[in-house]
Length: 212
Image 1 (cartoon, one colour):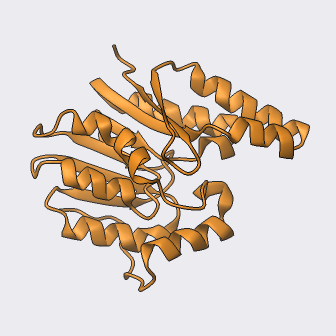
Image 2: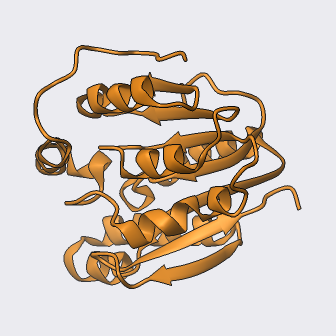
């Protein structure tokens, strides 16, 4: 098992670490709580549907690790999980998960634009808060996803259903326009979506098979 960027573990519980980052770095954390069970299940569904197969999986924006733990519960010892997280506060907890995993797992403290990736993943699971990003960053991130998805690979991501209405009510014109542009860009990739009403707030999980 290879673990990259592994500082000493911290004593704070994962939920407290997440809450602290939600307050101090809301733009990159993107939520006030980790993904709930229903949303986690929707995100990892492309892996669950292939339970028992040896898969190469990339998780981006792991945060405090709810999706990581779900993936590790599904993946075989012959699989490979690569985790990329830009916020260093989450790296110790993710490193602990990687060290305890029976599936070979790497953890990189990096932006996905700068991460070292394998050429072809079977599944890419993204929990990045795209609604908070500049359009150019969203384009660059999806370019990397598309470049590193295998021939039959699947990309899975989510967004909060109420974010467009909230931005329209609370943001200035420039911010609202940025948000609309990001939403339109993501919609342009197509894919199939499902609403996860049981999440707080409700979310839309999308999966895309970019190469047919």
